[in-house]
Image 1 (cartoon, helix red, strand yellow):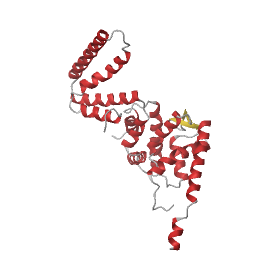
Image 2: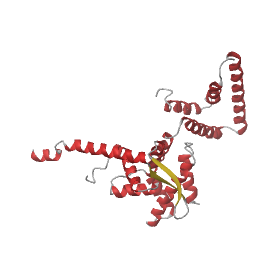
Image 3: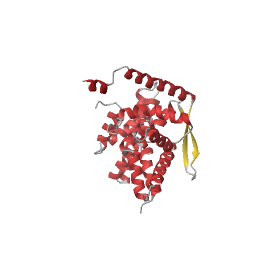
Image 4: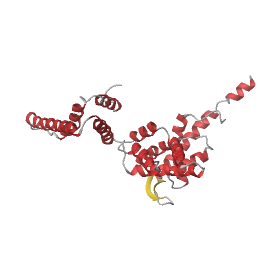
Length: 163
Length: 119
């Protein structure tokens, strides 16, 4: 059953929220799509055909998504990457397996905090904790088939690895 | 320009900012209306991907050239409007000056069509 509002909502969320670009940008994109659909319906098209034409006018999904991604800051890019990664892992593993992985990651993180305090007691370790919080799961999850490729692509896009 | 020669993508990209600022200089507007005005002014020659407008608007807002504010469409739907800020007006003058200078530079050369006809 074709639901125009659902379809518009889904497309716009895929562009805006998947890139963690901010909810405030979601409504204006939805408004624009609605306006295009109304324009085509006024020309005589039915809802589904009007939506299809409106999507074509919005442009290639990958281009538009990349343009939104280009405007995000480092934190938003990392969040978007984690979002895609989590969805991919969720498809491959059961909840118990994901829980076990997260427990392993937490134990590794705790061990790194203890080690840091033991070996560098005088140092400010806040930066280390933040880096460890992101990179330890990154390293652990790279053992998952398919995830490593995503991580390498991400690091190349960020300029950390050479293309 | 003949219909056989569509405006190339890099021209479209380069002209996006001055066009958007010019449209907002006419008055506050919103995304869909901006795209319609572009189509009207270019008589259909400029075919933008509508979705690409908003990242440009967001960048202009980040630069302080435009400012967005919430509003409502006639049917009650939430709508985001954009207005041109003073900094945006100054940037528009600079960009218009640059495009005029480019046009003047090109006009200093002979028209390649005239050269072809005389041969």
